[in-house]
Amino acid sequence: MLGKVFENMLASDERGKSGTFYTPRGIVKFMSSEVLSRYLSDETGMTVEAVQKLINYDPDLPDSEFNQLMTPPQAKTLKQALNTLKVLDPAVGSGAFPLGMMQVILNVKQAIARREGMKIQRGSLTISQWKREIIANNLYGVDIKPEAIEIAKLRMWLSLVVDIPHILETKITDILNLS
Image 1 (cartoon, rainbow, N blue to C red):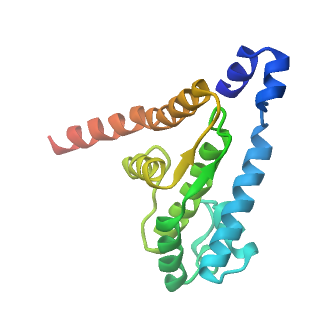
Image 2: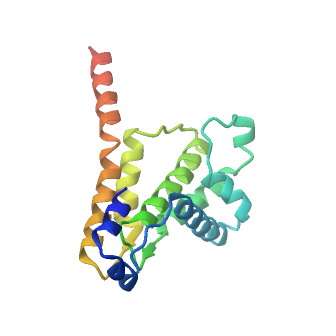
């Protein structure tokens, strides 16, 4: 939505000159999945198809099927590859691509955690911490329009904020269970 707002703030001739165009979510997901799958395949020696299954991680997949997706050593190698990943969007606009990358990275991190014996749910404190780490260490963007950078920063901040109600609810529940 912020991408559409940003695009509509500019006159059509200015959008063309600056290359400011809305990228549909499906295209962003495709680009993010392709980039990450090829990077992780190169870094780990896993096939692109195997990595794609992790990127499209389904938490409801039965353990018997899930455990065939990667071995524990592959999980360790994937984790190392994600820790060194640097993603640069040279025309960040409203931040759609970095945000898409964060989502696919989170999917792989969830899959790795499950292989290590932990089930991490969306909206958890762990997901929020991972988002902060990904934003701080893996995602970079530049743009010729300063307002684009601000909108991208806002989108990243909002992606963190959406987890707060779930985190607070969990904390309150934990506190009530301790009494």
